[in-house]
Amino acid sequence: MIRMPQIFLWCSALAMALLSPAHAYERGDWLVRAQIAGTHTEPGGDGLTTTGLNNAQFDYSEQWRLAVQVDYMLLDGLSLGVSAPLEAFRHRLFIDDGDASQRMMDVEVLPLTVSAAWYLPKWRSLRARLIGAWQYGDVSNDRYRSGSVPGISDASLDNYSGPGIGLGIEWDRDSHWSWDFAITQFALSQQVNIVTVGGTTSLDVDPQILNWSLGLTRRF
Image (cartoon, rainbow, N blue to C red; front, side, top):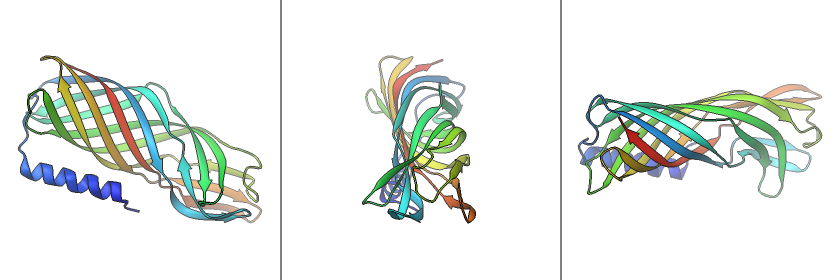
């Protein structure tokens, strides 16, 4: 499902790309970013109806971790990078129908993100970049909280993946160091496998995750 925040980010990024040429770092530069990275998730996925819940959607808890990102400038103003937190996110998975919310599972997810960035012209000490990304989340230690949802005896989560688009802003301290802030909206695909007396059913979770990061960048 496409949500308003995604539409806004896509339209803003497209407008900026059409109006501005790329200009920033030079080809061959390496950028290493030390970050605090976090997540904000909107409820999504298939509706789940059980005793006490009606058409409930899935919702991840918010988390933050220390993270590292390494970028390489393929061309002047165009970079390719990879990023990951230093340890897995420890999420709680809720199901929420608007009237009642149940904590259904505890899960650890280690996301790996590959991204490309298109830098816009620098203005004083500020520079902006448009971000296109793909994220893969490796799920481990997914534990169903026994008895949390009536009628469900067990549940497990698949790994997730999906595209994202975002914006980043940097403020230069000098020619080598800069402060950095970025947000990226991801539309991810994921399934949860639910075991009931009638058998196993797979439902879409499809988390709509907004990733944010704040940190310090070193240019080499």
